[in-house]
Amino acid sequence: MQYLIEISDEAKLSIKEVLEYYAVISISLKDRFEVELTKSMELLLKNPLHHQIRYRKIRIAFTEVFPYGIHYIVEKEYIYVLRILHTKRLFK
Image (cartoon, rainbow, N blue to C red; front, side, top):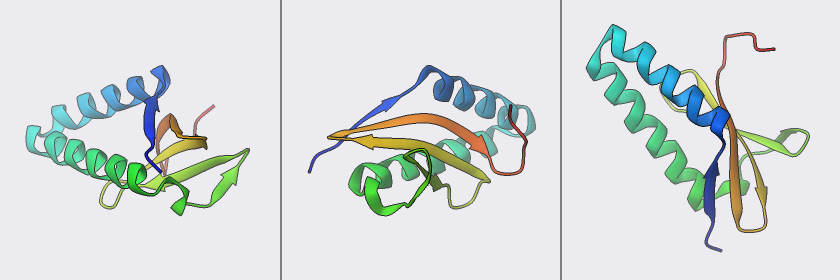
């Protein structure tokens, strides 16, 4: 089955914040995160049901190198990315 990915505004904001954070540290670090996130999203498109449901129909795909989780749900042919969250931070 061919899936389409939809990224929420909150997820886009999270990505923007993470990229800005890493850019302050190092442009190459920002670029590495961008590549890692793209790779993780591509893997999601290939097999979104690979990850188990964690809570309320939400699945989490973790990036390989950076400590971030992609929180998403799958409905029919759509993958809805809800948030990109750091694994060590507390969120409200």
